[in-house]
Image (cartoon, helix red, strand yellow):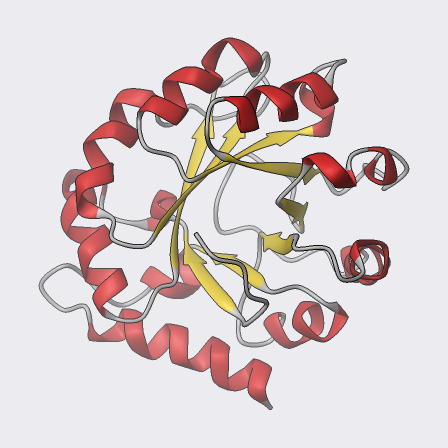
Length: 227
């Protein structure tokens, strides 16, 4: 998985057809998705319950690009190895999910995956300078985690800009998760984000049997960013 800072769209399968996940991954990749984003929720750290390692392992053969696994769970450490074995290219953990985030990031890299660090909307960036040498991706939550389809929290744009400056020339992706649309994508891209997670904004209006709207939706986001 080589690093580059070109804009990437990572559709969240939370917005896909649950009965056809494999086909949905193939369809959205065929329409131009750069990564596939898998939202793992435990009903404890966030108020929703979604997928586990077995689902990720089942999806892996259907994903040709990057499997980007976002763990909205606590505790995190006991499950890292299972998600890595399931084929996750990137495993992202929340700074709020436990007291030892440095150890969690070490464990993710030790399991052979790229390490991501996620920050909730109410969380500052004070911890990030101490973790920059441990991360491959920083995920800024622009909604409160737990559900798709929420509205973008505009106050997070300043956080994105501050993190971009902090990252400098390090090979660290800056990801946005939540409320990404053609209207909000230019705001975060201008601030320095290079990976946009989008759920309903990508999957709206399409299906496995009619995937063309997926491509049109992603082109609309790219075109908006390009100006």
